[in-house]
Amino acid sequence: MSGSLTYAALCPATTGKKAWLQLEDGTRFEGLAAGLPGYRLGEVVFSTGMTGYQELLTDPSYSGQILVSTVSHVGNVGVTQRDNESHRCWLQGYAVQDMSSFYSNWRAQKGLPEWLREQEVVAISGLDTRALVRHLRSQGCMRGVLWHEGTLENVEEQLAAWPKMEGSNLVDAVSPAQVQFYGKGEGRPRVVALDCGMKEEMLQLLLAQGFEVVRVPARTSAAQIMEFQPSGVFLSNGPGDPAALPGIVGCVKELMGRVPMFGICLGHQLLGLALGATTYKLKYGHRGCNQPVLHIPSGRVEVTTQNHGFAVDEKSLPGKATLTHKNLNDGTCEGLECAEARAFSVQYHPENAPGPHDSRYLFEKFWSLIGTLQHA
Image 1 (cartoon, rainbow, N blue to C red):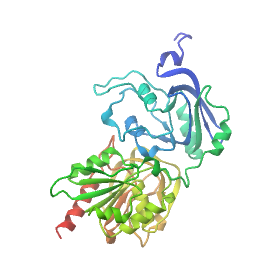
Image 2 (image 1 turned 45 degrees about the horizontal axis):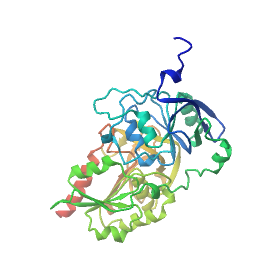
Image 3 (image 1 turned 30 degrees about the horizontal axis):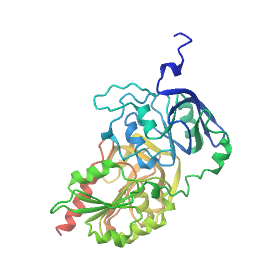
Image 4 (image 1 turned 60 degrees about the vertical axis):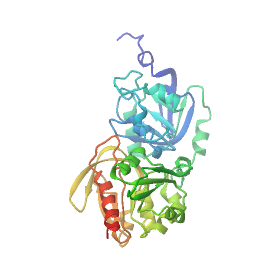
């Protein structure tokens, strides 16, 4: 290859300007500016998913975070509105090894770099993501700042002032302001979905299961929820530290035993806290696909998609709920059930957008639980 053909020349996804990602321990990585010009601060995390970058970028659970992709090449399938998991990107920044402006996909409507600029996402390409991820696995996820050439000077001061993820309430920023109704129809059981940053595929699977769904803001009180006369309550995923949400935990606790409940991800953590368990922050979290989870009652291993940095402490569960799922990589709690309260939850994402689909039976379980009660 000719020495005149640089990475910047071969990669029109970048602007040609330099960009850096620096961690709070002082480690710095250099690359090329992509996306919207500027700078962003956040918790630097990584996802091991090989596909579905658009689903990750529009997942509200990434609010407050700079996402690093471990896959070596992104952008090759472009972007389509139909794959969004919410109406916008929520993450602070995006870091990749290689980003392409060119795509081959009959469904695509535009390229990833153009879409990132429209979504006001500051990105960096051409950096050594392998070295970055190995560092995060060794030292743990930490705060960082991503900036383009000429946009930031006082890096260390900005990093020191940025709040840590522990104790951060990020739900209020991603939860909708208004109540929304979906799938209204005669004879359809009504589920109230407490939206703490709910992914679109969760809503679609609830509707496909046959539910009428009332989507309410995360700060909706238990009394207001019961005014909708729900057959069940769904607790969604969302960003931040679950322990920083005592008001929502109190709402869940007040609803406990009054209606069946099903929680996913943050919803799982909220249910655990409402039952009296505790949560803690993982060293570098679980983010990506193909994570093995043991379904304890059946002995079956499920291949799961995950996105979380906190976990329910299994040691705090005895006497409060039964452990139903266990992560086979590190043994952490991946699911619980409180039969007395007719409530269950999983830490992983059974809607599995973009895949796999091993765990969608949990939506059927929610339907069966509600149907059994209605016909009792």
